[in-house]
Length: 253
Image (cartoon, rainbow, N blue to C red; front, side, top):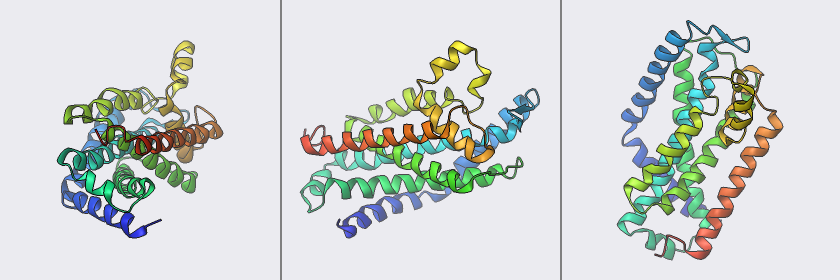
């Protein structure tokens, strides 16, 4: 693998991120604070505990996953779409780099940005609630895997998008609703039995459930199933990206 090529793409994308570091830092802090005011204070005063965990602490994993998924997708999609939009992607495709190196550079940078945002939200949460992380290594693993998998999805969206409106379409109409309906702010065991079964078709449920387990040791679905779900999702994204570069779909058109 051409590590110089990967590093060049990665550094270029990270520089774009650090140019707006203040905005990137302040926005998640304010958003997290507002969520704690609205959900933690207003709703938390009526729902004291969920699965023996205070409601304010219970929503922390969901808040982190909500931001991480959307940020990873948005950063990766814009990162690859912009070169396609201005035409510089052809220079990249003609360079002596493989598709794995291109993907590693763009996806690695997007995943790093999302991970940075996730850490900021976690640190902010400590100022509002008392959080105990039962399985810190598992928490880091789930966080990194989620960042990478949704950055891969964002890369696919960036290749598919034909304009800036389409670039925002999937995150706005698909990913955000799935996260909100995936148990971010509640346990799916609180739903009626029929809706519990319907919710299991939402892939985000398994990611949030596994991530929440790393905090509190409780989960709506088994950890093995959660790991299998994220592995299958990541593998499917990688396979689809390989097919894109093999066929030139949406790249050479």
